[in-house]
Length: 555
Image (cartoon, rainbow, N blue to C red; front, side, top):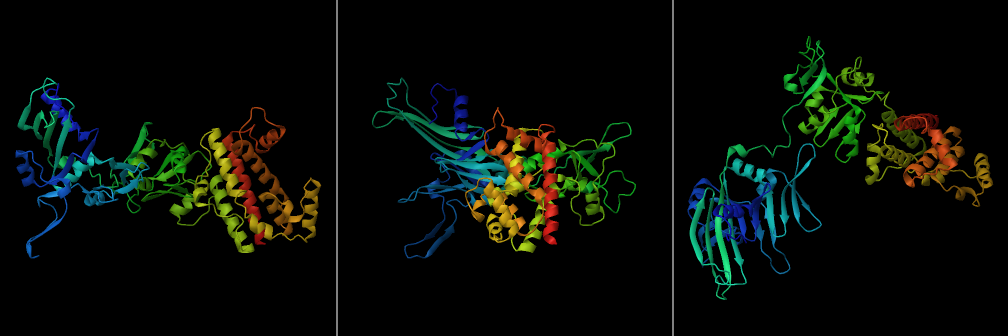
């Protein structure tokens, strides 16, 4: 309860308002607070008294009829037809607890999603066209709060005013006399948008109490309309598209409506198909959040948007056309603008994108190692399945699919990024080998297989035949031997990848590396080359393996 004791009138009014409006949130409902919407006539009428229009217990539909069941006054949605609900409650009955509900109309207008938290509270979340989330409303114990800008906008678009009704009571353990206070009763106090009555007295048990009841009024105002319901911000960013003759930066809007199209661009230096250059780091955000975004060969997409992308490049850049930038949500345009650079001399779109965008031809990636890796990986799996009837690489579990989506060329030389990529590549290749089918397909009676098993036994294995094949790699190599697929160069890269994962990701790093660690590092060139070059070499090596193996099984 708010007490005027030792407070100035101004401080007291401020405390009252802070009980339901604070830090950008408005409390629409609590045990002693209940906000409603009111049309203009009711809004004006209610500013003359402190009585509530109706309380939350009475905020439900009614049907009036006489004792004979004959219709007298008909159906009413609320006790006052000039009001509308922002929240409503259902009282506790038996083992059904009291529940608080935000207006269905408000939820539908902003397309809010309801999320239950571990503590039992609820959050109402707005999701924009970029997939970004905003908590618009939330329950806290027995109250519900809404972001002020949303409820003010809702009031404005409906042309209905907000009336926040409140009634606070505070009880004391002592009488007024013992507290050296006198009784006080203010019938009506009105100040700007606030109206209230106040009483301070002793109860029957000679203990003091304070009581205050009133209303706070917020008039609907069109200036509060911010188009928060619109998931797409219509603003357009400007981008660097080149240099002017004097060396200054040449800028252009990405608003397609202001750019010449294919039929009218002749003689124009800037048009819808003008390429815009970015540092490749612009993609990092999207790889790291593959649940919302997907970077594909020649394209990038997010919630409710899609754009073509010139990513099949062997340099440090990516290119997007002005028209595609104009189709991105404004938040994404701002992100891309941070990585926008003056086009380096001689840079142009890749021949891959030239064929796709200008000539309208289908074209596989030709330059970017990560894209070629994915293309050859998928092609091998397709050819393998066509030849043997089952896929060499099992599909990743749903919770692991992000590993494939996030495969990319490194942006930095960080150990963390390197380790993550090594782990992903290992899981996608070695851990995904279809061991069950590989094992079933091995012909133990094959002379070549028997000779292979003999070599395994000489290395100290006590198991015989297929039982001696304890790893996915050994099953794969034996399967190839069984099928007379002569590709001995494939084993070492696989084992070195497995060992590299063990020394970087699977186990704790050591300050005293073993001789085998030096062998692994030497094989991958880790001590000679930057880590981003090592990843590029890894993509290239396995791309070549996939391509050769696909050709062998297709014969």
